[in-house]
Picture 1: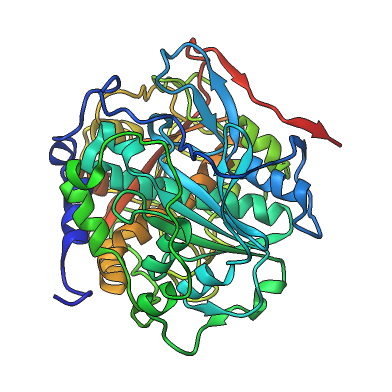
Picture 2: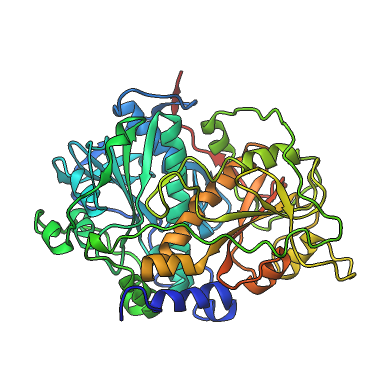
Length: 524
């Protein structure tokens, strides 16, 4: 079978995006399983590098990735933001990005000039895995050459942390969350004058060997070289193809002592293991880049007399990202909107910006994030209720959906009917759907296409949640929806175009939880 034929990735896509009953069939009880993992990955006997807790409360550009800058980048990138005290130990720790059940299966590794580290978030410290400068190896594994990066971040999926509840479905959640974290690191780095280059494509074995990872239990998912703005202009594709065996031979193996925790994924999750193994790459010559096919427009302006809404001028306040990240949340356990007046034009304006200024190896240079944004409006000021496609080129909102059948069902109710019961939709401000091109993903990247499209969607989803947080709204990512029903509500006519994310946006009540911010010792 060639890498471009149907395989494990497409089948896993069918199950996890099209058949919720099958996807959830192996799910375990919520908590208290005997294979519940530790809340954090713990290394034993390795040197630790504490990071300063004196970080600024505002994000500003820096000229060097010194101790304070590195600490700031990691704190706002993936640090602990809040602690919850009344959850019986189930999800006590919250970070700067969202995570299913606050399980945080994604791990963050940092390659610097003096060593390779694991980020220990609860202690805000770095654990040394290797001495020396190894920044070039993950860059070479991603098939690039050029100016040495200031740092290379590698995001991995520690599947056991999520699979003890979700089993095989954990692959979807971990790749989504790798995208969410990628999106946040990109935003924080950008606010500090750095640029992240997103690489979904890299040869896996040498990266795993560098970090001492078991590719079945904790594979690398994203490689992120970081350069100061302008310095990354010299990055280019390597002229000579590299192989995994040749690159892996340049480093010695390590076997860091990790506290055993959780189930063995290769035994407990056979489908997850198959799709993960099928996604691995052994040669940079297999890398590809392409643009997705946009959804057909036949469903647009389905209602008689409907015309696109042009984006009116709006005075959108430019808020500090650090303030917004501290405020961002996913809402209470039961997502319950409260009646409020949210400026729809401001949200609309913010959403027009979120697909741009991302450097990714998934699409041609300069192309936007490869997912379309659909906005279903409930209770927003300045935009009539209804369902729209956001036009990336013009900023217009195009009415979409089937022609009115006379049932009187409004757009928000149509989405509620194809969502598994749980969230409350009354007073919902809006619902955002991110629609991806399944065939583009698998035709271009083979079985790795699942993680590419999921991670690209996660990146965009985090930007949507940040845009919502800037207006005081919670953003709840919801996977429990029927894809065909959402397609119909959005007027999508081809199965290749799939709603990959559903994000509920609204101002919410406190939910009865005791949540305390975790604040570093700020410096002015």
